[in-house]
Structures are given as structure tokens and as C-alpha cells.
Length: 415
Image (cartoon, rainbow, N blue to C red):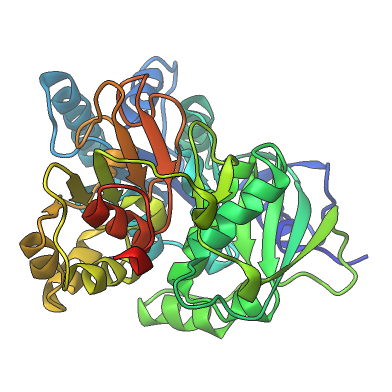
């Protein structure tokens, strides 16, 4: 019997000719990511070990992205602890470069790799045909010390995508629709594998959107079947694209889904669950206080272009805060070169540095009591972006931008 993409990646990491879903294997890890959310806890535990050691500093990347620049002395101490530890042990330390998953894809990830990250959205790396998965800081410590860990091979849900998304419909609408269909627990500890002509028609940036949100359905990881687009992206950045694994024709899938992309429409995830999906056209009028464009899911150049196209002829409504945070400095610089940042600022948007920003709900754009946010962030749990009585709606970049202009959740056609 053949293997799925996830099984092939785990087999490679375990040094075995084949593995099967449900088996538990010891694996060597290709990369380890840790950000300022929990790295300080991992460092504290490291110093309590009897014989502390680091297996391979070259495989570790520290990223400061959740609270950057530091907004109080406590955060400043966390950042300093990370800097000092990284400097002492020769670990790559990226501070103020962008959201961790974006900079990892830009600079480190290769197809076929098995990567642990101390952040739930590490599944984003499936955009390049890698197996990325989030772990806690205790598992991260073990991986740092030993260079390996264990993995239970996940079953795979196959999503065959057909056709092409219509104008005004985005990969974010597709993934939110899928999550709404299968539920927030619909892929628990599974691999969500995306394939078909519709998947191959998507850009690497678009694929990032799908894999990034896989964890919101409970998935262990999400992977888009890699192809020449992935090879070109990786090799253009000076990295290797040797393991472009695809599932064998006789691979075993737990379930297979088929989606016609031309039938997907703009949707909104309503409070307080990501699978609480409503078609935009059916959403009652919801007035907003703030709009956010950014995060590891939707802060790339594609989304900024969408916002600029809408705002070149419109202004942000008085009293509405429209916060934009590019996913990385690379994206920010490209937006500057294309005149996008100027367009956003002149229209009344507030452009932040490249960081997690409002999505994280900790240091920028925190919303107050009973306030409403429409966001391209990853989650809309109660209190996610501020006060426990606030509400977060998730939508695509066009809807978020149009809503900032209108003052209520709507698509650009209403403008």
C-alpha cells in the first residue's frame, strides 16, 4: 500500500522505508521555531536541567513577533532573555523582521521537512510541502536538547480542489468554508492534504492561507501537494527543493472531499468560533469599531494590493480604526515600492510594523468593552483581541477593507 505525503515525511524523518497512520515513531527534526510567546519559559526550564545541552543550534530559530517593540518592562525582559540565550548558543534570532511563520517560509522551510514550532500555526509550512506542527514549550525543550522527538503518524483527510476561485473570492473564503463544513474538531490530529488542479492553480501565498488555518479545524498539519511553483519559490531563495513528496495513487485516506472553487463565495466567521460561518450576503448589518488587515494568515502582498485597490478611491470612515500590519519586512518593502503604503496612509489607515499585531490582541489595536472588530486574523474566540465582551468577525482582505470604509461589515461591491 502506498503512503500519503504526511506518511512519507514522517518516514523520512524516522529513517524508515514506510510508516502507517496511528504508528508512533522517533523522528529527527529539520527545524525548530520558538517565538516570544513561550521561549522564555523554555529557556527557564533549560537552565534547570542537570546537564543542559543543545543538539544543533543551526536548526533553531528564535523570532520576536508577538509583542514587538516591547510595550512594558516585563516584555522587554522576555526579549532580552531570548537575545542573550541566542547569542550565547549561536541561535538565529530574528527580531522585528515579521511574523514567525512568514519569515520561516521566506528564509528557512524546505519541502519534505518535519518542523516543530512552539506556535499552533506552524502548520503553515505545508504551503511548501513541509510537515509543520505546533508543540508546547516542554516538547520544544526536549527537541532542542535532543534534536528529535516522537510523532504519532496522523491519518489524512484529502481535499481535492477543482477549478478556479471567482473574482472577489479568496483562499481565505475557501478555507473558512471548509472549516465551517467539517467543524472546528473535524480534523483533530489529522493531516489536511490539498490537491487537484484547483490546488495547483493557487500561488504559494494562497497555499499558505489554507495550511495556516488547518489547525482551526483541529488538524495536526496542513499540506498542499507540492509542484513546480514550490520548487521555483524555494530555489529562487537559495534553498533546496529535493523532497517534493506527493501521495501515492493507492495511499489510504480517512476521507476524501471534493470542492468546486467556482462555487465558493465570500463568507464571514461570526463570534465566537471559527466554524461559525455565514455567507457574507446573508450577514445582517454589523457595525464595527475597528478593522484589521494582517496576521500570519492574510498579511502578504496579495492582501495589501487588494486593500490598496479599494482605498485608492475611498477613505476610511471617520471613527473607524483601520490597522494594517504587513506579515514581514520583505512584504512591507515590496508594498512601499509599489506605492501601497502611501495609498493606505492617505486613505486613513494606520500602518504598523511587521508583527502579529491585532490578531494576537496584546500590544496593538486592542479592542475595548463591547467593541466589534472585523479581521483577517486567525481566530475569533471570546476575548481574543481585547475585552471579554468584544466581538471578532473574520473575513477576507477585501471585506475587511470595505468594512473600514463603510463602517459596517460589507464587501467592496457595496461601495
